[in-house]
Image (cartoon, rainbow, N blue to C red; front, side, top):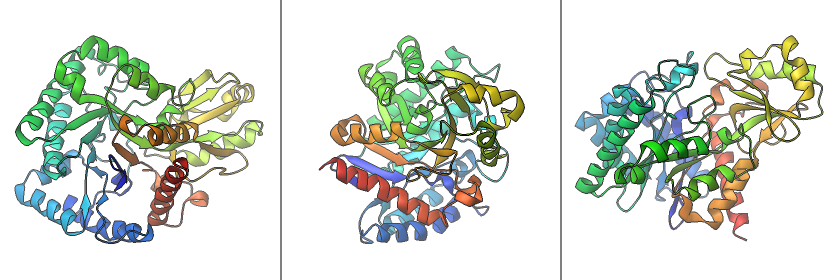
Length: 392
């Protein structure tokens, strides 16, 4: 849906596992839930409502059959839904089993990632409404601990090729789609500055400058050093296209709490599915320790580090309306709130806004919202209320 004349807001549907019966059946199961959410937002059934689609390689294969793509288009149109963005980060499975660092594979040094992304772009071009800028979010180059993955020249070659493909889509269909690399901790582009340096050196063609940008995830930015909003400003100063902004919060350990109790409770957030990169910060907001995952933190050896640190922040997407979670934990939302203010006052920054809390199924039971639908509804209301209040 539009939250102003030029800005579209949606919810990323990557929190719903893919149906074993295929992508079309997955969408069929989701649509009634989203219809009810639209009504609970006091919108009528004929109000155009955006869906943040996500596609893995198997779903792309299904939608490359023209009959299936036509069916998807009809399902969306018949229910007054539309899509302006697709999450193409996970190539393979994203639910119901260990994923961890494999979520970054294939990375952008692989032709598999290039081919997959071009096919996603072709699908979005068919779904994208006229006069609407579209976006695709993708992995941040490569996971830095995959020793043979970070081949910058190969990554650059493939990104330049996908830029040419997006340029051809614009020429043939008049549809503008921007690719957004989603900077993330422990990847070759963790920070906006790192991507800007790569772009300066490797993405020099007119098309790559125009069609390759970033997906700015506010949860990920919470794990970096720096003041809220400075990363986004860095990208704007470098004239990097902001393809999409993902609104999300991180998990944050409160300062001045018992370190032993905090680490014990932190173990409740460890799961076998996703990576939860963790950063310890001192009082000057400098990183003093970094961990690939919650499971890498050992109570005994890391207790002193935590006692000396001011806080810790975990890459765990929390429902954005949460504030205090327990005596030990809260949400890190300074980046989220800063970015909301920035896009309210400067809507030209980005027209594609997406709420992304894909972690519902791995949230600890004690803090899990009653249903996915209620979580989504409250997150929509949080953003819309903040947007409304910010305009007053």
